Length: 254
Image (tube, rainbow, N blue to C red; front, side):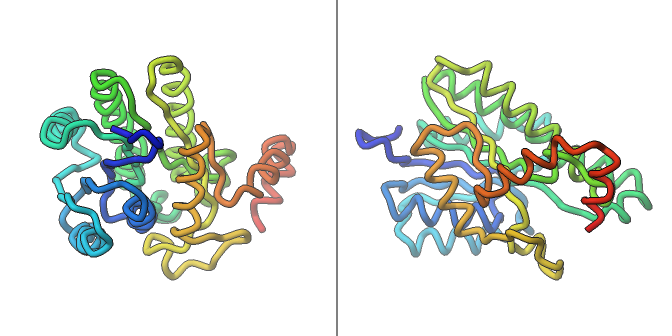
């Protein structure tokens, strides 16, 4: 449970090998967080993240198997974590894949898999988490959307649509939980320099995992419902979402 100062003491990461997740947990451990559970696949690099967190001072760090595309297992995984570790203050869900539109066009099954990973699996997992949050009477769920989901572009519309769906789900879920002691925060980063974007040309206003983690922590502390990373993107996309569609097609080509 969050302590008397409101600081997070325990966190579950769905997508435990995430670069942003690593940075977020390291920042939390510098505070009063001592319990970290990393959920994901063995090949996602969770062991290296766990080692970094132990070295940083976390006293309880464990990795558990969680597969986004296996929704039938999600309630059991979440229940096991809450049953064994007690109250979980924060659940952070950075799990997802980027992919390319060319690859999705060439392989519709891959496109469907991306939808399952980026959207479907996080819906079922989030609902499982919220059920446990209701039992303990508090908790914060942080879901990673993207500016790509605010207004999709033709060169990444499959990925963008998965984030758009997750963003809408998170907002509706958060609205349904007002007054329960449970909070849902949506994070909308732009281009983040991580292993997922390695080899890609950085977009304007690109940022780092450390900076996104800082903004997430600030958002949690202030009770924000939406965090943009960096914050300037909020104003840019306010304009983009109101552009006529024909103009947007030309702008998004650049």
